Image (tube, rainbow, N blue to C red; front, side, top):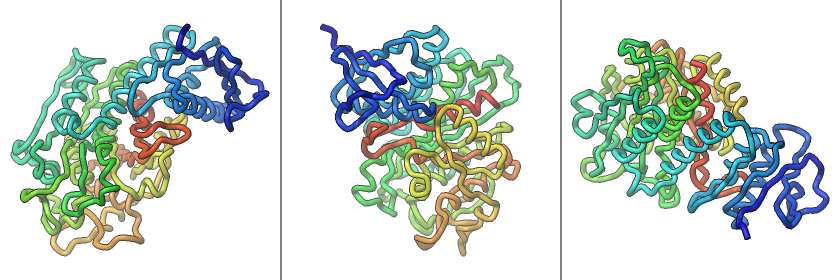
Length: 431
């Protein structure tokens, strides 16, 4: 007897309930998901049904029938993934092109989720970079060149933020600058640059997190995983433009070498930054990455980071927060996200936000001196705006609150979700 459970769809209301859900029933041979009338609600129901099945210990399913759309199959796949162990999903019959698209989506997302969920003794700065190189080589080895800058070499190159944050760890900080160039022309213009925050573990430094606040901080490299997976997905989807991938990777730990409150970093562009919070480290490493991105001349710069708890408070874990000084670009990102069923919400960013962290001793601080009463996510974005070219035109900052779930819920297993990968991939394809 097969252990595979067959899942079909129905546009008819459920005649009976399974558990407390009216959208999922069994006929003894398989399960049926009963779809509501509204198309957007259908995807929600499919994902929730998949999640409910998986939580019942069902790990091997096959989607049955020829009425599954690509979006419905992908919604099921997202709900059916697991934080620990293996789930086995067979797609419904479809054209080869649709199956190839689903396989590409799953491969890129599965890679990102594995990185985000990986234990921090396994996923550390240099190993994250190695995995990222392998992922891009999987889809485009013939078109990839790269540079890795690590340890004290960062100082020699002038990348002070990344070195400062990571110098307390025995696992040295490192930056990956990967060049995907399918044109074969070394002089081809760079169409887009991606920058990812790769803090593979965040203790908070001397602004030490609490134990509960530190437990899930292996996810603080979610930005690096997201932009890498977005590039691999875009390549699988036919990306034929030159793109630079810049990952800023470090562990934010404490020892006698760790940076302290009151220290001042002088960045390569001359900006001086006083440290008032060592737990506001993501913006310090992204500043270096954004300057590398600016040096490429790319008209589109996208960074992604699990940057602030304030974004999480503002939009929860179903949305990612989008910031830009280029409102037309931000709206385009939101529209493209909607087209792939990812939810993004624009939060405020204006030029004055760059001056909301005053310092008596430097051009700016990396945080406000007092907690509470401030637009923390906007201020963090304003800090980053100091390090992007063209007065912020062509730059998007994703504060990816939705990329990780501390605990499983009705839609997602605990751990990485992959939210953000498809939006950024679409932005690359449209660049």
